[in-house]
Picture 1 (cartoon, rainbow, N blue to C red):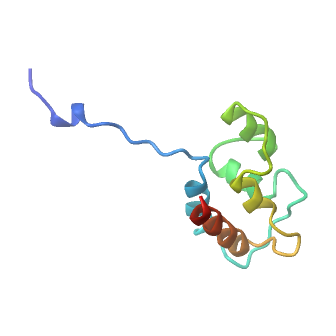
Picture 2 (picture 1 turned 90 degrees about the horizontal axis):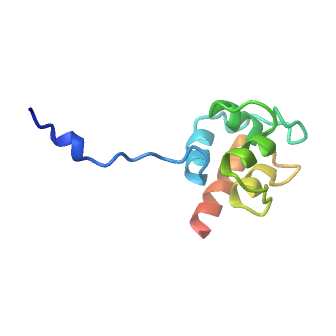
Length: 103
């Protein structure tokens, strides 16, 4: 039987719901584009969850994926909520990078 050295290689998978993943997604969004923080489907997390294949309200779906209650003190939620006056993808990217640097 032939041996393939790739059989022993460890598979590295990234968490699509990590802060790093959110940053990578935000880097691809138009910085000046605004999002509606009050709409579960159109808020930052709602759009990000749809991008990752989830349907429905972002907080509900993400909570089910992580298997834990939503904690709005998590850096991901702080990035998404931010300030009512800074609901652009560029401002969210700045908040997400700051949260990652602080962790």
